[in-house]
Length: 161
Image (cartoon, rainbow, N blue to C red; front, top):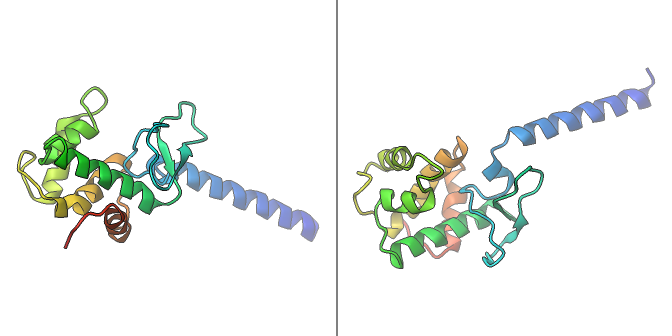
């Protein structure tokens, strides 16, 4: 086999490996939307670049970076807390992931356990980064690094320690 053909074959195989790894990456990570926020044209999120691509039934927003995806999620959680008075993990998760689509009780119990609180115990705004960190794990099956979660939360105006 000539060097040119060998190089071409290696490039093709390398490209296939990269594509296979991208397919295995969780949907929320592929979309820079680690909390799987639904796309809505009326929501003009900072950093939103449209709707996801490459799936049979597109549903979720796509963001230019993970930080912007986390920022949108932190803004939503702040709204849940301040406008709707949802201050417990259960209250937030129940609105975020309603039982018509999710096992909301299991979701809230898992996240509350990781936070070290009861699902019905009030949490504070400063808990938002850690709340999102564990929600991301539940949504995607893997964690996003905490530095990115904190940066996105900070961009949303969340005060934390």
